[in-house]
Amino acid sequence: MDAAQHPSLKGAVLPRPSAMQRVFGSTLMSVLIYAAVMGLIVYGSYVGAQNMGYNWQWSRVPQFLYSFTDDGFQLGEMIIGLGLTLKLSATAFALATALGLLVALLRLSGLVIGSAVAIGFLEFVRNIPLLVLLYLFYYVLGPIFGLDRYTASVLTLAVFHSALISEILRAGINAVAIGQWEAAKSIGMSTGQTYRYIILPQSIRFMLPPMTGEVVHLVKSSAIVSVIAVAELTTIGRNIISDTFMSFEIWFTVALIYMAVTLILSVGVSFVERRYAVGQ
Amino acid sequence: MNDQKPMIEVRNLDKFYGSFHALKGINLTVHQGEKMVVCGPSGSGKSTLIRCFNGLEFHNSGTLIVDGVEVHENAKEIRAIRQEVGMVFQQFNLFPHLTVLENLMIGPMKVRRLSRADADDTARKYLDRVHIPEQADKYPSQLSGGQQQRVAIARSLCMESRIMLFDEPTSALDPEMINEVLDVMVELVDTGMTMVVVTHEMGFARKVADTMVFMEMGEIVEISPPEQFFTNPSSERCRLFLNQILEH
Ligand SMILES: Nc1ncnc2c1ncn2[C@@H]1O[C@H](COP(=O)(O)OP(=O)(O)O)[C@@H](O)[C@H]1O
Ligand SMILES: [Mg+2]
Image (cartoon, rainbow over all chains, first blue to last red; front, top):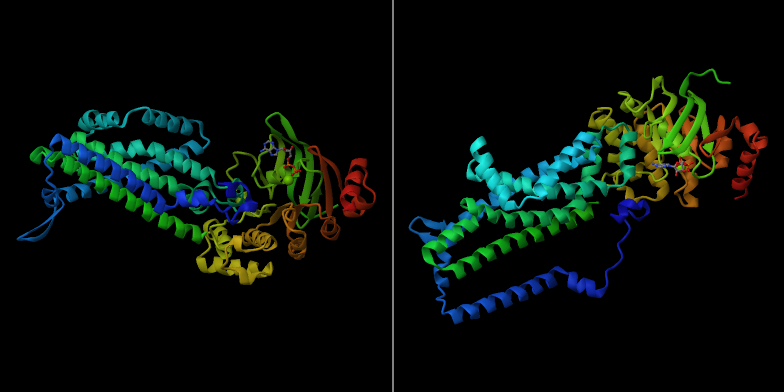
């Protein structure tokens, strides 16, 4: 951001963070701290369960992840559920980004009606709990527009996250120096061309880190659609538990799967970020 | 004094920022092929004035006619005007995510709708013109300030505009790079381009200016040919200003 506001700083090397910051800010350190905390929690619940006389049956868990039958290798129910979680999240994220961009551009348009519509939308979405939004889509808009569970879920997540994403996009767009607009205008570019060829490509590096956080957030909040029984990971987990009563094992497994997905996402994006930074 | 056709005509132009009166009753005419140099203390409205010429700012009253078209906020022709009026900024404002060549090609391709091959030819031609053909594939941040400003000039030239505006093009440069940019601008003078240059480089002004303008506090205080401007300005304030900057 600073570099954008001070053209003389553009491309300058950032000051080296202190040794403390480097150690505690490193990915390895975050993973270690995370693992330690998770370890404590797991250990605590294990001891607690032991005291309750809980009967651990971890050996029955793998069948819900994968199995080998006469037909060969089979994906288990939970992995199929994870598949739906990913599909749901990806679709919702794509929609949320498109909608978020539209809202951000409306707000930046300088048109009175445009910003009024955008702000109205943002306030509406921001002040409603996600669960209530889901009920609105499924029980109210669902019957009116004939939305099935899956569509209602995708729309709920898309609308909810578009509000947050539009703020990320707006901040990223605003972080590009005003001189870029002036230069683009002075060669006769239209507003649309300026966004497309000049502003958005430059704002991506400002948007990537918060957008990663938003994807992770979305994957996690997708669990909420289990209340309308969309067969994603959390719903599947609950169903398995009601058949097997293995609540501790299954919820731990579900949590681990979510964690694995979000960690892989974060690490993946940080690679993209690094490559993009070099490309600049 | 000039029988060429007028390219920029300004009549009783006023410009406000809120209640601040930034330009006060400006009158001037720039003819085809004329080189006008504008100087004056910081904050006197020089940038504001030339930014009105290509619609980066809009005036509040009076008339402004650029290349036969009246400029105002809602003019449908505003993009067409901007294509005819190039601008070079103090801070270069190159597109940092594009290579030098792409910086030069994007206008011709997206605005003038040239093919990639033609845009490439145009870009290389003008990169030659500013003497840095070998930098085509670098990114702006890899160039020196002087080179960046020459790329910015080439980017404007690629649009083949009829008028070029320069807003203190050498003010952000280290002293040793000022001349390489001024030299390119002097060469441009010989092509017959209409130019309005805001600068305090008085050596350059003496060499190329047809008309000198001195502004202060949003007004044009002095407008005269360089012979008179530098030897016998009619206003005391202009004389003081010149003494001040020529001392350095
Ligand atoms: N966008 C703006 N909003 C408010 N005031 C401005 C703006 N741009 C310029 N000004 C004011 O207008 C005056 C003239 O500015 P400018 O044209 O940039 O002067 P110069 O280029 O001669 O240094 C200054 O006092 C400046 O503070
Ligand atoms: Mg200025």
